[in-house]
Image 1 (cartoon, rainbow, N blue to C red):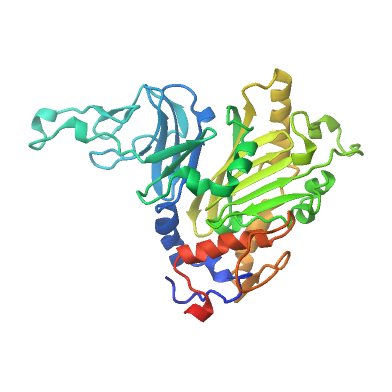
Image 2 (cartoon, rainbow, N blue to C red):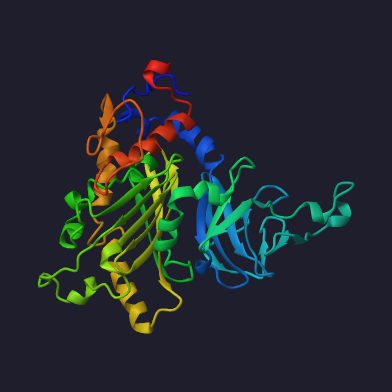
Length: 390
């Protein structure tokens, strides 16, 4: 634990230094990203065919998410079991096998070492079956593929807990999706600033949400004890839409306005959203203490008509991406949180705060206090003690 950072006594305060401290960031990589948490790395719609793959980072560890020749999806460390060379450099594609270019070791899409030159001169006792790509623990929920580097991570359904229903709703109800495409961005902010979105800011910062009638209190917000947060909120069809050249852009064709917005924020920093007819998974990775990379993946449902698919594509590209009409303001705020956090003191939560001596889980849609259970979980996970416990 970094002794220079003092965690405040009040549960609605967090030290600003946690967003800027480089030593703390290094501990977070090991404790959280390489530790006992599940991390969504792909949706099976991204790699639907045998031989399809996607590469990602799990903290600092490169991984390959591969649909094997046997039809099973696995996650491997993207590191040759010979000398540790990165095996695959493409972000996605299809392979009959993965070949390490250094010494031409060849691995099947199921991970086994298929061949390596010069084995008659290898060390005594060498056996190919002991040198397959190292596989991580994986689990799946509604098509979302999770991995963990720890044997101590609880079962996925236990870990997801109280946001399971919201997560399923955000993934189209059953997770039977088809990939539409990606947008990728790097934010000049710490990963925790990126993931600290709340219900309070949505209608205040985002003009798009105000136009869509994000209803104050007309919805629910469900935090969990292990840092997740689920939102289910009303949206209102916009009546006066003359500000758009093509008003059909904001039609709700497959979504009930009563639950027009669903968000599942999974600890530490994955966000799954279904705003209007957009199905969006934001795969995030920490790059450094002051940089976070996010891959916005957009989906349709496999049962959609061609017309509905076109509608989802138009909404996805225009509303929710890094420069979307609803969320374009976020990048500036993430960066300004990071800049402002170099000043002394604590950040304070106020909207919806009922008490300051312990966390609670009964919060309204537009409260910012729904973030407090996550911060309490984070502080304990990282070994901080509140000032009176020190």
